[in-house]
Amino acid sequence: MAEHKPATGKSRAVHFHGPPRRLRLTAGQPGPVVSVKLPDTLHAYVDERHRIVRRGDDAARTHLRLRKDTPPGDYDITIERGDGTTETATLSVEPRTRLRITPSALHFAGAPGAKATAKLRIENRGNVAVEIPETVVTGIFDDDGIETALAAAYRSESDDLNEIVGTVFGRLREAHGGLLKMRIIEGAGLLAIGAWRSIVIEVLLGAKLHSGHGYHGTFELDGVTVALTVAVAQAPSERSKSK
Image 1 (spheres, rainbow, N blue to C red):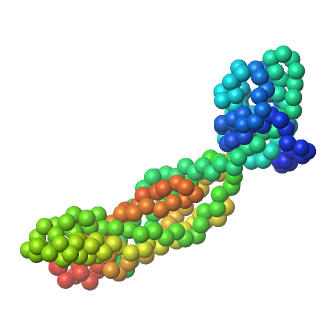
Image 2: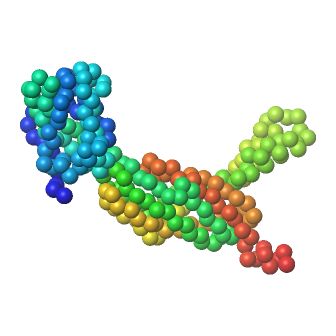
């Protein structure tokens, strides 16, 4: 595809601005719009089923819709009014990051101190390339942490409110699983527009995690929130003791 070159010259009285799928009229009033002529650099990004200009004098209803991978930048366009006159306008396409990540939740399993891996599929549906980082860090929390903390308060025989509150917060601190460092061992780096990639994430389960417990948390990749769960098995030494 041809490289986009931003429009030059002074700004136009009529201005469309926004993400590719929803370019709204933000300046000027072109009157009833019959058609829009786009520059050659945009022809590859026009789908006639999606290219829509609302007719009428209401500026709030006047918009243009292009393909979601239209490169960001400023373009000169020509609009034709209902009276047959034409005018050159400016079309400003915003950069828009849009990732599709599957599955929506990751699952890690292993004993304390062991490594665990999981996979994600990431598709870039925006109009800018996205950098997949090599590491992501997030906190995790015991699934039963809140219930355990409240149960400890109910079992307390003390009438001292400060002592009860201290018991609850103490148990909540114990339920925090610490920071989970996720290393992307396959698939880190720049993800081009329209491309997809499978990534492999590796974590080291903290030695202080409680055997037999489940933990949960979330992390973000370019604005997309992904849930994660951690199932902690018994360490080999603990399994041998239980036999």
